[in-house]
Amino acid sequence: HLLPSNKNNNDSSTKHFSKYRLFQSHATNANYLKDKHIWQGLPHSLLICDVYLPNKSNDNNPHSNNTLYHQLNAWNTHCNHNDNNDDIISYPLLNNCNKPYFEIIKRIIHPGPILRIKQMYTLPQIVATHTQHKYVFIWNTSTQHDREQINNSDPNTPELILKGHKKDAVHALDFSHMDYGVASGSKDNRICIWNICDYQTVLS
Image (cartoon, one colour):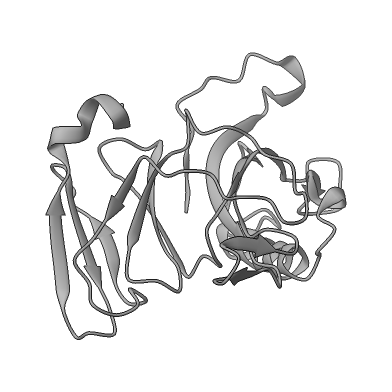
């Protein structure tokens, strides 16, 4: 999800760039040991990134949206095949003087590999995630703690856990454009809809 950031660029070094917020998953080989109730291995994580794009861009420019998404896909492959994760704090998207680039500003340890990420339209700091589970997780990325990638780490605690599916929620995931509605599809062939407006104080 690549959307304009609400923060202004006051740094003179980035004044010719527009800043966007990107939510990205980082999958590893970590697995949950049910008998011991612990995660083993380098943890899965939700990465909150700032992406900086040059302000001047057109279809004939190498910084056009098509090229950008190819570069982001390349980074996605790099990210998900790098278990160490130490060398992806800042990664140039193009190798020239006005190159787009991104910075990872926060890592949220996630309970399982992220299959879907969806940003809330009315509160852009809120995201929902699917994993290999029947629950839907709701995260306030502004208040969640940044975590180091350390083996056998317990995951962050989401602000909300939405229950209702009988099987893994691995299909459609979306927020309402107008209110606090969340919709999710799963392997149980059901679509669950929740209204989380009662939790505005937790989410805002």
